[in-house]
Image 1 (cartoon, rainbow over the protein chains, first blue to last red):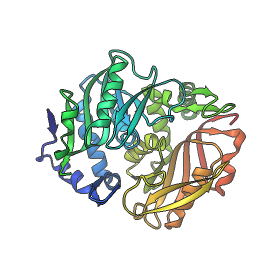
Image 2 (cartoon, helix red, strand yellow):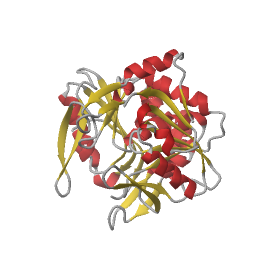
Image 3 (cartoon, rainbow over the protein chains, first blue to last red):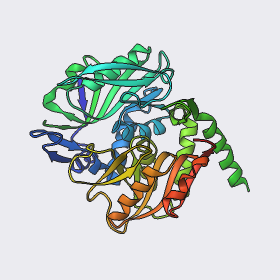
Length: 184
Length: 184
């Protein structure tokens, strides 16, 4: 089941308004939700982080894992505020040293996400962060990878969710929190 | 005085938290891996605090972070000093209208991009990245920002490689490095 931030929170309305839609990117027919405009509104960016910190600071989170690249923007401020480690989950061949990876299918072909060996310990509680959930394929691969090293993914949190792509279904029973829900 | 001694002890811990990976991405290169710093909450927090202390009273309007590790250090600084955060990205990642700057590599060229309208003419900009080597990417970022009429106040890096003397390529623009290492 997914939880969506209450519309009644006045901060959420401003955050939602700060996210712009770019039509036909990366290809015709796709309405791309661009968070970079949110980052230009300091108050809204701060509110986004504050809402997520309020939600997770007392949940005994050991690790915030952020998915490259826009997960790197939202994950670290949360990690710093709640006293957790930050762990980047990256495209292939970016992380130096020993890595483990999880392959996942795209509409055409496959992709792969990697994690440093030893970054996350067995039993650690992980909060997984990305800017947006669409089909949920990348998040599902990230969850698999974290569980393979024995960690517990406590929750996934995304700034934006595309309602009709039903990303939650790919995550099964894994809790998912979405700040702003949009039509695809 | 006690202020600088306190800063020294934080820098020592930050230095110790950064690991070296030999022969990455190719033989003979000693890669400075900041991901281990992100696993030490206190050291990660200290690195951000040192930057914030340095820049909070310099009327910085924008923190520009270079993809991808600049996305980890830039936003926490931007949030703390009340600045916008602007991502500077590899080609074709940013949706909407962009401006590009090409730069030379050892073999061939690369390109970085910024959104049109993200930075306004006259704004004061701090550029953040994890590491400066030759300075090629930073120099391209400075050009991009100056092309829209903004002013680069300083470039802030976690790590600098002294042997490569990268800062000499930045045309007199101040460069602040938290930890310096010998060797490429």
